[in-house]
Image (cartoon, rainbow, N blue to C red; front, side, top):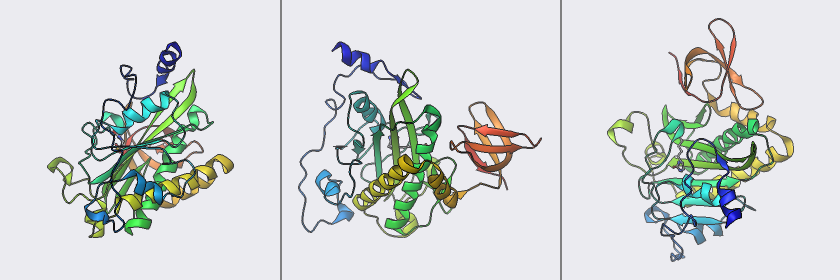
Amino acid sequence: MEQRNEERNKTIIEIPTENTRQNPISNFELITDQTVFSNHEFVNDLLDVKQIQQGLETKDLGQNIFLYDSLPSTQVIAKELAVDFAKEGTMVISEEQTSGKGRMSRSWHSPKGAGLWFSFLLRPDVSLNQAPQLTLLCAVACAQAIEEVSKVVVHIKWPNDIYVNGKKVCGILTELVTDRNQIQSVIIGVGINVNQTAFPEELAEKATSLRLEAGKKVDRTKLLQTFCRQFEKLYETYLSAGFTPIKLLWEGSAISIGTDITARTPQGTFYGRALGIDEDGILELQLQDGSIKQIYSADIEVND
Ligand code: BTN
């Protein structure tokens, strides 16, 4: 018990630790035993662990899945599993999130059965500085999976928002569990708007779904399996060859590089030309006085 409590004292960057629960999965109902139909019709169906794993071409990612009907946030459970020594690639999925978390302390709209809301954990041997690279890697994997399955063409807006026709279809939130300035685990949360047919008024101007863009429903199981395959392939490349091949792929799908942008950061708003990303995945912004500012975290907007 003492060791467990010591583990729970590890630093979790970006959001406060919830240290009260001993078993992260005991307070919510896990979906453990859904029937798999041989003539499974994806369009009306809920996600099913057996079905996801039957078509999973990965070694680790998604091989250990916790699927819930409803959770406040998959991110919170994944972090608790990480602190509890869950295996690399462990994934938490929920059909609905009641307090989905977005970047920069925003919320993430996660209606039941309409999207893919999941978080997974990695234990890479990388430094804190390198952690943003994994977010960019994830954005590339999301873009590849979305294009392959839905046939919709997407773009990545720095650092990790996926856009279709000027509207956001997917967001990524990365958080770190650290121990004495070393990464103990990286928790990556992905939200993909898949089959929504409408959005609340406050989101309607800026968000879209794959269904709205493709004009037909999209198979969530297939999309998740494809994401897992693409992510793991890129992750293996990253671990063996470093960030450069990932950076090239990211740049190939990026909008806003080479354009004039406004970057709203926690430290203030900056205007300038987005020159590109550096070897750590940090955005380099050339300010109007010619100096280069490194942007670690921001919302960016392309200036007209
Ligand atoms: C963003 O603001 O663009 C990031 C959105 C990340 C949303 C996902 S949905 C699954 C996971 N659980 C959460 O609470 N957030 C992430």
